[in-house]
Amino acid sequence: GENVEQHPSTLSVQEGDSAVIKCTYSDSASNYFPWYKQELGKGPQLIIDIRSNVGEKKDQRIAVTLNKTAKHFSLHITETQPEDSAVYFCAARRKFSGGYNKLIFGAGTRLAVHP
Amino acid sequence: DVKVTQSSRYLVKRTGEKVFLECVQDMDHENMFWYRQDPGLGLRLIYFSYDVKMKEKGDIPEGYSVSREKKERFSLILESASTNQTSMYLCASSLRVRTGTDNEQFFGPGTRLTVL
View (cartoon, rainbow over the protein chains, first blue to last red):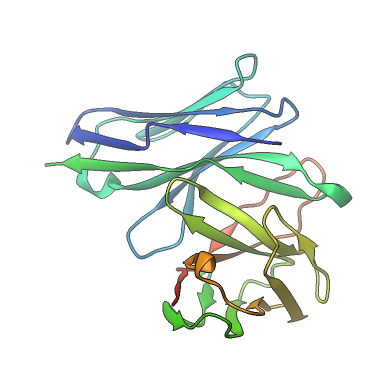
């Protein structure tokens, strides 16, 4: 069935360095790819998303790239700060029975930014 | 401010007990979701509801049921709790999805359930 693989599972960087998290998806019909950030003790929160008709999207220090041919997408965080420490989830949308959309999530990446 | 609340942050139950997890959203969203979150597995969809009294099975509905009697409230029910249902449970809501649009899911803080 539909699958989203996410790597790495843990990532440790020094403050100011860049961090990259990569995801691959299996369903070529997927056309929407959000990224969620989950801080300790909180629920996930959307930080950026990209649609399949766009190759790249940027929001300040965060950017997402999409390669539809290879079926993979990546999250890039530049100039990392300690407050970027969290678990990050990628997701891909697919059509569900009845015409409803649902998200398939990756396993998550625990990012630690050290001062 | 957008708000999804869950009735308990931590819950400890015994095997065989009936367990109710409650979720309330104040955003007038049509869609509501229940996920479970396990290390190394990400978030997996248990059930979702797109309207009052409507429900659809997700990827892992076995051992669970849901109830949506009011638009703002979505309950997850474990009819007879088992140890393999020990997990973090997350509720989410979103506006109704329309063709060609995608609506952000807003998550609650989660309920960590331990079944002994």
